[in-house]
Image (cartoon, rainbow, N blue to C red; front, side, top):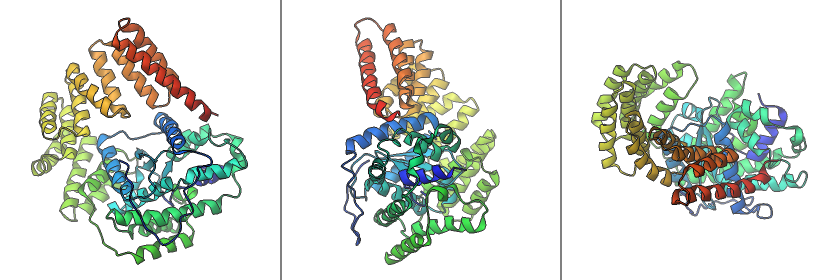
Length: 485
């Protein structure tokens, strides 16, 4: 359990909810904003730079989930909400961390992190969207930058270098607590009222964003109530409530606001239901009875829910290496919806599990012809090419993929494998360097690129590219130094 200091600091700096594509749209409300200034401390470009630094630290130390299907889903859902938010000044990026404790948080530069437990606890897509809408509102209102202004009056920049540890404590408590230092002791007092004001502002703005994006506004207080109930019926409150205060007045205010809006129950999308099944079947350490209970509940629902239940059974069978059973369960879904990337992805995983690599490649190539822009299909096909001893095909695909998706660790990792199989040592080192850079290991990345440069032909364009990338990373390293306090 987090210490009192850590709880207070997390609540102050991250100010997430009780739980916790760029677009600009007007979102009207009858109360004034507390403000989105913070310009005296940080510019938007500085916030983006700090967000870049801390997101790399997060990738390097937290148990993030890099499942292409799940990342595609949460980023599409997040973008749908961002499109209805106002005061959007940064791009948004959404991450999923493997953690069975309920939580979510946002930090500089439009970065929003969701715990995988949110899929288990949310009963519908509107509830999950309410968490994201609230976190988006923390970003657009620049609550973290405003917290920085408040803290600088007492301890200028003391907490900036420790924010990475704070983020880790949210995503992975053991790793985060190991990195915490006592230099933060001065940040304990006089912050709760400030945090609660931020929370109420994010509730108020977030609930409007939620409704304008087509979700049920009642889902926000419903989810709050669900967490509040856990306090009453459990000896251990949810982790989220240790860092995000939920006074009765806040819950009442959210309920009142939702009731003033036109309630319009919204059916959860099939993508949400499939994502829920995938998270619970593949990424939860909870007792498997939770997954089975969710499958049983969905099997009694509407057609979408019944399909998701069947997908969930296939996922469970696949995870248990019961490949024939998984294939049999999934085949009817794939016949019904042959273009579904969810079904194609799992079926090709089953193919690979049974060493039917040519079948997986044929399936993915056909699907990609029909959906050439699908990043999920592209990365799956690249992986299948490597498994099928076709590294040249994988490399051709991945050169384009990594150019379009430079922050996807999957692409660089598979490209490194393909390059190694082709005995292209410099290209392997270059791909590994990008992985190092994305996870905050800048010096290691520079070392690998230096080795790649020595292997490239002297004076070649390839060598020039490696050297230019080294210069870029050195500049990045210099910029990041101020945050490494």
